[in-house]
Amino acid sequence: MRRNEQKKREDRTTEAVSLPLSMPVSLGKLNQKELGAFDTPIHIVRLMINLCGITDWSHVKVLEPACGYAPFSYVVSRLKGSWENITGVEINPRIVRELKRLYPEYDVRLGDYLLMDFGDERFDVIIGNPPYGIIGDKSHYAIYVLRDRKTLYKKLYKTWRGKYNIYGLFIEKSINLLRNGGILCFIVPATWMILTEFSILRKFLAKSGKLRVYYLGKGIFKGLNVVTVILIVEKGLKGLELYDATDLNNITLNHVKQEYQGEMITFRTPLTDYIESQARIKLGDLFDIRISPRSPEIRKCPFLSKEKNGRVPLLTGRNLKAGRNGGYIDYDTCYSGYYIRPEDIPRLREWFIKDRIVVGHTKGGKLVAALENRHYAWTGDVYHLLPRHSLYLYGYAQPVFTLQEVVKILNSPVMNQYMRDKYREITPHTTKSQLEILPLIPLDKLKQIEEIFRAKTQ
Image (cartoon, rainbow, N blue to C red; front, side):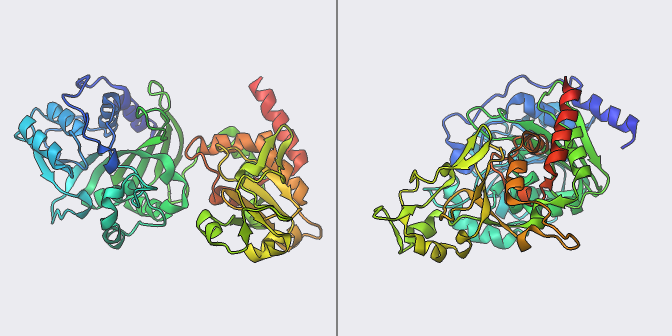
């Protein structure tokens, strides 16, 4: 981006557009949470409209999907001076009736946005706060009211993968409803930036237009512990801009990619750049990464018992502890409530009887690793790093690293700082994809890096 163009965009981000300080109505007691809906704070509505970079809204055709009480439509109508060319879609009939009473000129349509047929109708701007959540059974997932439509959604949308979050479907649908040159502006969870479930969506977005991602962090929605971003897609262009917007009074550009292909979107710092420039090997080059058996399999397993009687505990993520000198394993406490005979351990997973490294999945984004050489069985949120070819790489006469060295590298303050710098709080979990691309730096070099960056911060 040219410097003057970026300066104009930064000016538009902070300029004082005359917008209302509050909205006339809110979701109130209408329990929209079952549909994944949450009120958007007015300062975020204002920010998003400014980030669209439109100075004259008079002839702009606008759509607000899953509009609720239509905060974005309402503000745009004030900028336009009328409700002309503003459309909203809402699935809750009670809200639609109220909107029609409040704003008779508003083109608000009742229905499921994801199943609605717009024909040849296209829009200049699609803006809003789509619902968040996974569709499934009431006992596990908030958006259970749409579970009967899940099969149909999966057939209609190309970006669906795994336990897909419904906001991804809203992004795909909205991109397809934009005119070429149009703008999508959504506030959504940050998880799509790195999780494997969104890999198809990221590639779809990369082909669709230029992405601007504004990382907001936590605390935007009261009572909702979710990390959010503002995603803007300019259809027909290409590239990526990532911004740090955790301080709304000082939004800063982190980095630009002229060519974005759909890879994970992560932050860059001097530390991450330096480590990645020094590393020749990634963790995934040396290890196969597996996950422990999950609860449904464990409950059905015929050779597990709740009686000890000479058996050993089936370990869980709680048995992997974070100590002052790194991770360690508590082999004695049976957090799972299940025991297994040592001779049955390979029946659960053959690779349980191999020396390996265990890494915590749910440790608040922190790397916690330990050497597992007692060959216990595990369940739950733990990754198992199985060495390939005794840690040899092609062309190397000696092992590149020992298991003990890798454990020290993973637990090191430098690598934990690297993870915090690169991924922020995008997800509280350490993912398999993060581990696969984690750069491995020899311990002596890690100490040098720690000294270099400690000196820079003093």
